[in-house]
Image 1 (cartoon, rainbow, N blue to C red):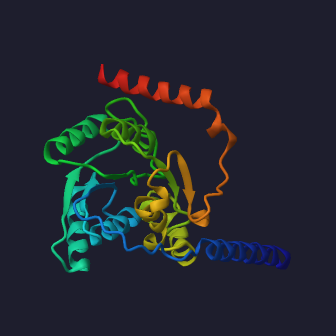
Image 2: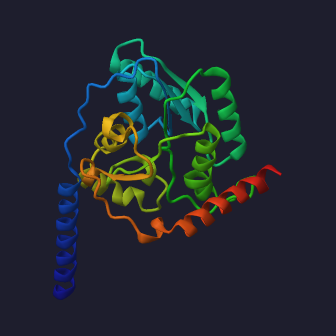
Length: 259
């Protein structure tokens, strides 16, 4: 029994040390910029909470017209009110419905955007889910796969984005973990050792505002390498044949849904 207790204690000690180390590595200074976005329009998906909320708040504070594109309209409206209260100004923040698991919803959102907006300067594909039980949507797609990949792919192509970068925010305490079965257990550890959602949003804000990123194409940015871009990427990502096949397969999936 004593040996067992010692072993568990050692394991916990190692886990705590590892968590502390990860926390130390995840702490980065916030991106500081005086860039103003007056007259520009920004879409942030999943902007009602976590990284998306703090990204939307920052861009709104710079004068941008910010569209909170969210599945839950009530939570999105609550977030809008919170942003207005936080900034204590008459900033231009609106809410629009967007369910990325539904390609029908994506197309409707794009139609509304073209009808109601004269311009679009920045699209931030932030929304994502994790730990969701396997569920098939009405369009025959697995829910998480549709939300995290097919939906953002479809949205971006319909809006015809030009400059694209991929962001890895690092270990941040956000609501993305809420669907995990062990969320109640790991929640306190996540809050203790992970960075805040506000800190996690800094890489996204950097990509949206930094002059260095204005002409970037296909960059993969991680918060641990925000300023030098030397981020490790799986070699398969450079396989042009594989990338072409993935693109064509995704388009075929979307065509089958629309047909």
